[in-house]
Image (cartoon, rainbow, N blue to C red):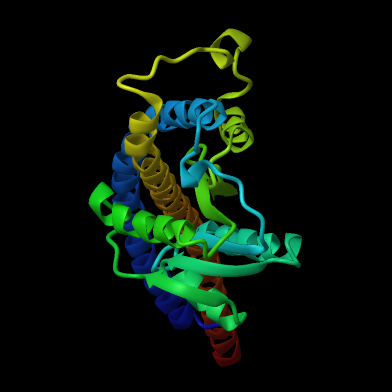
Length: 296
């Protein structure tokens, strides 16, 4: 059994650790509040943008925009979003597991990665995956301008006919307690893909809404040329917002659990310290009593 001094030192050390985890929890909670507010504010816009793209994709036209055309081939591009640091609970592990599962589900495909975050980059390099671009210097809460460069790179790769499909692996924010890793097809944009995205997010679309008709002004071709790439970039930005809100939520919960575990350890060690001190006092009394008895 550890001595009273050793237990006291451990209690002191754990108390110091608890102060750190509590501070990190409060910082993550403040960041989560901002990230979630930004995510929820743009979510409706992103979903309705998908619906507009769906209508554009199924509208008859002389020539579809390249981002709306289905392609054949088995070469895929995957954008994986992770964080640069740990202490985020299962946030990074979920996204990395989803990327590995995606590769296993498409054994015939040649998969290249664009990676955001050092955690994802390290994991993919350890498994020998091909990374064509890596972004590890982005701030925690990225701006649309910073995301645009990543989106444009992926769109350019697709328009250059280097890939048949482009996917996104990110973590969808559900609540402070729940974040889910998702695989979403980004390109090409098809009505089937959009329907799945919208259904997963808000449920089935009412028939009246699904059959809505749009008027194109000045005309379909000009509208599509200006809108498709912009809306595709908006979807990428929304996925970054979802991932950031998920990361901060996961980090807050991880630090909260760590603080609670530290509190439980302190209680257990305090009890052990009191028992050790009581045993020491009892032993001293016994020795004094024995000494007095021997003298008398």
